[in-house]
Image (cartoon, rainbow, N blue to C red; front, top):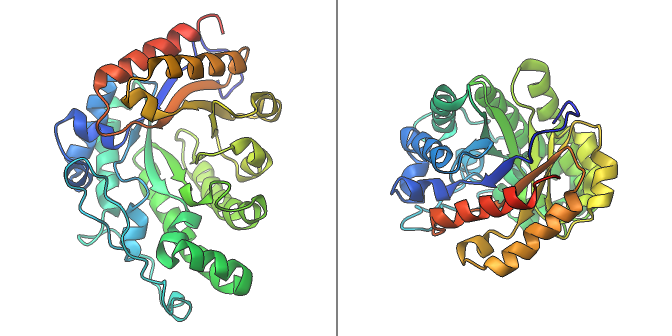
Amino acid sequence: MLEGKRPDRWPFVPSVYEHGAALIGGSPGEVSRDATLMAEAAIEARSRYQHDLVTVGIDIYNIEAEAFGCRVSSGEGSSIPGVTTHPLADDGESRIDALDIPQPGPSNRLGLIADASQQVMKALGEEVWVYACMCGPFSQAVELRGFEQFITDLYTSPETAHNLLEKTTALTGQQAERLSRQGCGVYLYESWATLPLIDPGIFGSCVVPYNRRVISAVRRGFETPPPAIVMGGDTSILMDFFLAAGTSLVVADFNTDFDFVRRNTDGKGILVRGCVDPKQIERAQWDDLARAVETLARKGRGMGNFLWGCGCVSYDTPAGHVLRFKEMCLRAGQGA
C-alpha cells in the first residue's frame, strides 16, 4: 500500500493497548510494569483478532514523561496508569537547563518497553508489522510543565518552551533508536497536540519540526516499518503539516473530509486509518456502529491507502465485540 499498490482488502488495525492486559487476565498497571506480560498481551491480541498491525504498550503516553520525573498512578483494576504530577510546573524555567536526559534503568520503563518489543518481534515479526509506542516531544513537554503553563510559555517565553522541547526531543530520539534496534516501527503519540487544544500555528512551529527530526533519524538509520505520528481530532486540517513531518500514517475519524485527505495523501506513501468510536464497540451499539462503518466505507471507496481502525479499545470491551466489529468492517469493505 505504501508503494501505491492495491491490497486484496482494506487492513484491519484496531488500537489495542490496555485491552491486551484484559485478554491475559492482568490489570493495566500490572502488565505495564512487566515486559513479559506486556509482550504476552500484544501476542494474545494478535492470536484473537488477527489484526494487520500489532502495537506494543499499555499506558502509551506515560513512559518518557515518567522517566523525566512525572509521577504515574498505579493502574489498579481496570484503570489505566496516568501522569499525576508535573515536576516543572512551578519554577520550571530555571530547572530546564539542568534537566538530564534519562537513560534506561530500574527507576524507569525505557528499557522495559524495548524488551517487550523485542519479545513481540521474535514471536510475530515474520508475519506482521510490529510497532512500539512512545509519547512525542510536544506531549512530553506538556506533561512536564503542565498544559496551561506550557502554552503560556509559548507566548510569553518561547525560548523556555523550545529549550524544553529540545530536551524532550533528545529523549524521544534516543528511545526511538532503542526501539528501532529491535526491528519494530515507532508510533509517536501526540495527544496534547490535538486540535482544538492547540491551533495549527503551534502545531506547525512546535510539533512538526521536532517530530520530523526524530522521524528522519529513524528513516536514515533503520530498515523498519516507517515511523508515524498518531493523534485524533480533525486531522485533515493538519494534512500539510503531517506531510512536512514525514509521517507514514494519519488517523481520520469517520466525520473527516475524506475527499480532502484523499487528494493530499494519494501517491505520497501515507496510510489513512479511518476510525470509529471505541465506546460504541464496548457498549454494543451495533446500529450506530454500522452507520459509522458504512460512512467510512463510502468515504474510503476507491482508496488504496485506507485502513480500518478505531480509538483505543477499552479494558472492559468483550473480545466478542471486537470480532463483531472486525466482521462489520471486512463486510463493508468488500469490493472497495
